[in-house]
Image (cartoon, rainbow, N blue to C red; front, top):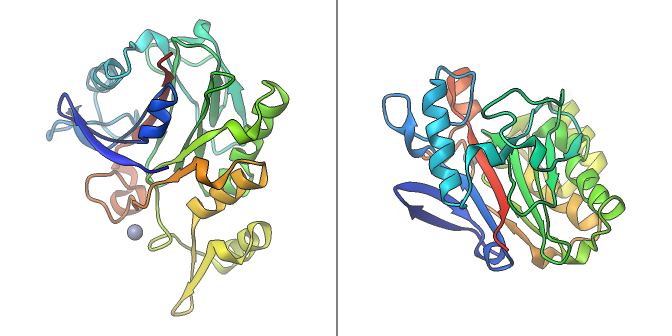
Length: 265
Ligand SMILES: [Zn+2]
C-alpha cells in the first residue's frame, strides 16, 4: 500500500488509495490551502495564533471532501496518553464546535458510517486504521510518548477485544511525521526505545542518537498481527518538507495538520 499526493478544490493532502477503495475516506492534510494566517494556510491547531473562524472554515472545506460536516466530526483531545476512545454520533462536533466531554483521548474509534474522526499533529506520528470487514475506523496520535506507551498496539488490541476485529483485516496508514533524519534524542530515550522495540528503530550518526518512530509504530502493528503489506508508511519527514508544519522547525507557533478518516459505504 502506498500514499499519493492529491489536490482537490485547491486543498493539498496525502491519502492512501487502497483505503479509499476499501470504503474509507482518508486525508492527511498539508499546510495548503485554507483560511489560516496571512498565507491562506490549512491549520487545525488552536493554540498557535490562528482565528477560530479560520479553523472552522478549514474543517468545513476538508470535511466536504469526505461528504461530511463539522457537526458530524469528532476531534481527539491529545495529552500524549495511551487512551483510545470509541465514539458515536452523539459526540458529533466535539472538539470542533463544542468542548469535548472526555478529558483525554489520543485515539478515537468509531463504527458509525456518518461520523468523521480526526487527530491533529505536527511531527508526531498520525495513524489511521480501517477494518473493511467490521466497518470500523480508528485515528491515533502517536508522538514519542505515545509510541513509548504503545498506543497504536493498544488501539489494535481494543479493536480485537471490544470490536472483534481480525488484525489480518486491518488496513493501516502511517502519515508524514518527523523522520529518522531529524528525530535526535537523548541517549537515555534512545536506549529505552530500542530496548522496547529493537535496535532497528534507532540510528547512531556521528555519536548522536536518532529514532525512527514510523518504524516503531510499524512494528507495534505487526506485533499485533497486522500484515506488513496492509501498512502504508509515508516517507515524508515533517521537518524536511516545507509544505508540512513542524514543531521542531517552527516552534510553538507551528500550525497543526490533521488526519481524518470516515466510512464511504
Ligand atoms: Zn527530516
